[in-house]
Every structure is written in structure tokens, then in C-alpha cells.
Amino acid sequence: MTTVNTDNLTIGGCELYFASGEASPADATMADPISLGNIVVSEVSPKSTYVQHYVAIKQKRVVDNEHVNSKGLVISLTFDEISKSNLQLFFQGGTIDGSASRMPIMSKSGITGRAILNFKTDIGTKFMYVVPKCVLKADGGLPLRAEDWVSGKFTLDVLYHKTYHMHDDNSASFAPYGYLDFTSTNIGSPF
Image (cartoon, rainbow, N blue to C red; front, side, top):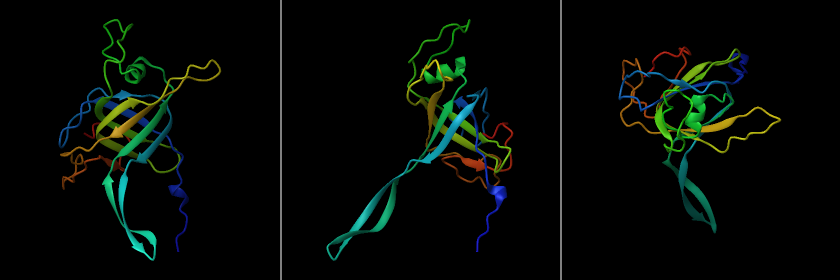
């Protein structure tokens, strides 16, 4: 018989730290990560497709086997801090000039990098998701309504990293889609 452990009930929320360029095969540094600031909604979704095998039994087709055809993860994020760095990412902008007053837009098509999602909460389970390779892209529009706070959406497509291993893991465990770390929620350099 299973009992409910109320210590596992969690109120969600996360911080996202992103740096361009994928992680090295083992450890590297996450130099100058960009924080997206206040994330008002976040969602992690498997992005897997399956191929099914059918067999006909008494004029009915039934599934007798299923195999993962492709797999991945997508992380959806809604931010509401309209900072220059967030707008640069959202508009796929180039480098902001020396005066930081102008920025060319649509000069990039998604930004490949590495990320840390830091799930910190006052109530429930805390953990970090270390992502060694991903693409950050705008997702939808940037509604500019006079009666509400401005917010925009990003998707973070987690990509397969063929040589990545967990940071500080003596067994050098292969982690092509990154890993969850339940021991720390302090952003340091888990790459």
C-alpha cells in the first residue's frame, strides 16, 4: 500500500541560465550565462514518436509491439522581463553595438547553446536540469496589450550530445540529454 508523502508536493517555478555554444564532452565552464529573469510559466515535455506494430486477430488490428522511433525534450518558457538580452534572444538579434542602443534583428535562426534550468521552490522538491546542448527559439508573438504585462515565449529544444558525461561523476556516466542534479540548486559551473 502506498501512502502520500506531502514532502513531495511541490509548487513550481524555475530560473533559466543560457550560454551559447554546446558543452564539451566532459566538463567545461559556462562563461557569462544569460538569465531570462522572471519565468512565469515553464513546462518540460517529452518529444518522442513511436512506431507501432499491428497484428490482425479475428478481423481486428491490435498493437502487439511499440518502439521509440525518435526521442527528445522540449522546454516551453514564458518570460515577462523585457530586457535587452531577452529581446536580443527573442528577435534572433545580432550583437548589441557599443552604446547598446541599437541591435540588428533576425540575424540568427535559433541559438545553439547549453542551459541550466534551476527549479527552486519554497515548497517541495528542488533540482537543477543541466542541458549540455540545446536550441533556444522564440515561440509565437510578443503581444503588446495596454491592459496587461508584456510577456513572450521561448522553446528550448534539448538536442542529443553524443559525447557528454555528467559533471563530477567518477563513473563518467553518459548523459546525452543532460541530467537532473538533486544535490544543488546553486548555479555554479556544472559543465
